[in-house]
Image (cartoon, rainbow, N blue to C red; front, side, top):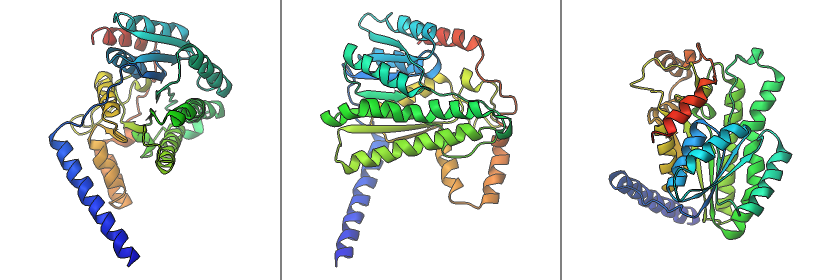
Length: 316
């Protein structure tokens, strides 16, 4: 009889959540206010991190910028302060070093306060075949793309738990859900970041810390210096999105407290098909979409990216 009771409860929950999902496909989800929240963004010196910082400044948040490049993070801070009411704090931090993360985190707590929205955005990519990737590059990829998430959680999560208030944002990647040719170390680090963030989400749920939200973001390649040279065979099916669009979707997902965000929408279908069709069918689909050749002309970040980012952000 116990199993019948549990099945009935499960059926009721499924029906309720299905109806809820349908409703929110018709009307927008309510958005939370972030004015006055302390938002820390790693990798905020350029690209997506800079765009996210400027968006949160406009929403009235107190924004804390972290980046390894002092000149870049200072430039982001300068752009943010063009908004008269902006409250922005810039710090130089090498997110590949655990002790530096802890040191700067303590500085932030003393000078700004307890972080309530943590966005782990900093990332690196080598874009090389596995056997051409040096051990140092592999270690650097994991230190920034994975371990930095762990150390920042260690630094800022205790205060969130004590207050039962906060939001953890993991910028993973579609490469954290599907292996991609030429991104062996990157995929491994992003799979790990995704798994870590999801595990902590479940852990907080068990602890009944429902005031702490989690958003895990998995974007496909988008037009940034980090993925210079990447291509897509059929842009209408699997587009390389504009950074401004990616930033907008991420902020919207945070405000709506979405747990998962995959962008563009085609990636939801791709991930579903990966687990529901045969391997050979999946390979045929990958060949059709050209995903195995996406990095054939990969160049990575170039010096002009910084200039382009500044130009883009000042036009927002």
